[in-house]
Length: 597
Image 1 (tube, rainbow, N blue to C red):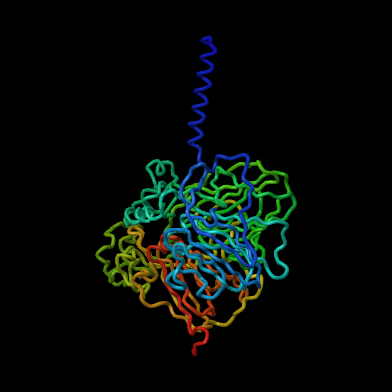
Image 2: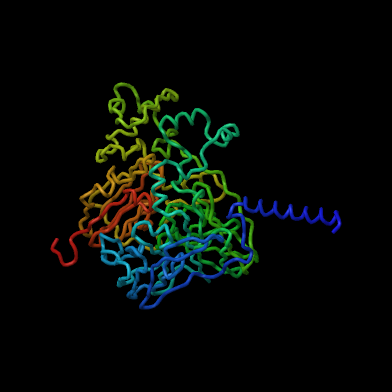
């Protein structure tokens, strides 16, 4: 071999090695399996359905690990039902621990709801439980474990219920799109780390470089936030530093592909089955028309992007006319990663994958302190003010930062003033009470204020059919979503579930106006079992009906609820680790069937 040939071979080998090294630095969402995966999720249907919950070895973007699976897959099989049928679903537990299935968003008898210790005992190892219930609705829903942290390990799956009659949504084909997050770290270890160190998974904290480049907050703002012991980059508790974001169980490198023919109306049924991740969804180059929210039909709303919180579902129609591929982007709300798939006429086609956008920063509005619209004169921090009179608890911050004549130390004390929420018991588990929470249902979600195109907001939603109950509520109820981010303690009204003895009582068929106030700077998707409620947005009589609503940081949401389902029902934050840490309540509706009221 000549020296010339040897040098060329070494040079090519070096370039190949450098290329392989560089490819490992490319984020997963930017790499691609050009073959694409076009397999639809497995489907079970009919009068008698059988599901098995067990352990499986499972691969994500070429890496193998453990998962809790249903019928051996993540997500579990698509359960396809028809309105009017009787669902008979036998669930066998092949795990070495108890398990369960909750049918998220389905209206059914409380004993079929699948919450261990509340609606049934759970399913013991080796046992089979038979779920039997009438199917009373149509739309897109999902199911998941309500046992421990199994949901994080892969125990979830989609549900599609076809209407008994004609579907008011016209489409030529449909695809279920299950969004989720997965980690090879065991969920109990994740929980321990969250309790041990605040922001442990946040690798996007502000830096000196960001300050110099003008990307992050200025020095004055940083000092103010530090004085309140808050971090404006703390948008998600668990981030892309740990998670791989999945679409139908596939990582970004797998390039799961949904097929279409140009000109077809394609229905995409988005389900956020993540444990902790809110996603911002868009398909660059295509308009999405929202036609359903949480399984309920809404008047069509054309948008370029929407935010889908944990446990929500949105159905959209897209109509691509070009013979080319489109990238489906599910970007984590904190911009630490994305789920990625492709919509294409043929397998193997790919489209450009956009870069992650700049991560959002928390604002005073996220703290329940809308400084822009605040009347500083009315909010006097002098000796005569109620805020000044209220002493801070021993564990409160001792910041003494002055900003424009307003003491942020005093503001911090005011945020802990029990007068803003008299039912909240102050203590280590309640870090803040928002002094000025506002209705944020007209806002697009964190980080989406200035993106290009139209972004869906809750106020865009209008029910396609008239609301079934338009009575004026007979009473009102206010609940505060409380917590301490540093200690990872979460609760309703300052009480975590383990400390609560009494449920929230409702009289059967009563109409109640419920207001949720978020006293933290984290989003909380709140879900009620066994019921739908009407958000107080849109025209009277056609309020959008939902089973889950995201309450933005420092925000509040009001809805009307008809307590028409007798029994005991779970009511909780659907951020899995928030619920596990205490943000869970029981709603009881009495009298039961056969009881005298």
